[in-house]
Amino acid sequence: MQAQTAYDLEQFMPREPRRRENLRVAEPQKRRGVLSREHLKLLRWLVVTAIFLALIVSVLQARTTSMELTDQINSKKSELSSLQSEYAYLTNAAEMKLNSSDVEKSAQALGLYEPEQSQITYVDRSEEDTIVLPKNTLEQTLDKVATGAMSIMEYLEP
Image: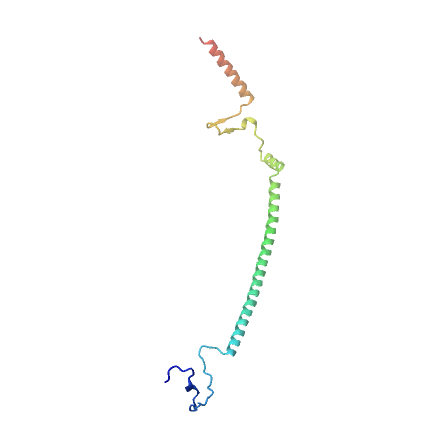
């Protein structure tokens, strides 16, 4: 070999013709786990169809649920209306039975009358446990006479 030449002349020397191998077309190998284009199209179509069907089913279910809830609301409204009218009827009936003139007539028919002042007892719970009975005029007069007699007796005693 020559030491560093500017050109490598061996590259330009005639060479033996290389024998070319005949090329042949190989059959495409079937890859396992990889889908073909046709299979991908079919799979895409199935996925789109499944999503579309799922949407249709969900819309139908939402509508049926909405209709059921509307029916329940309407039945509750009619029940409420019925109960309100029954309440009004019962309130009027109670007012009629508790009418003061009717109660007074019923009480008189049973022999009941308004209590007299001497029959009323007042209970005062703010102080000690005592019951104060109102005095009628006769008792008041007798109490005054008794108090006067006691004061005269005290005056007369030495």
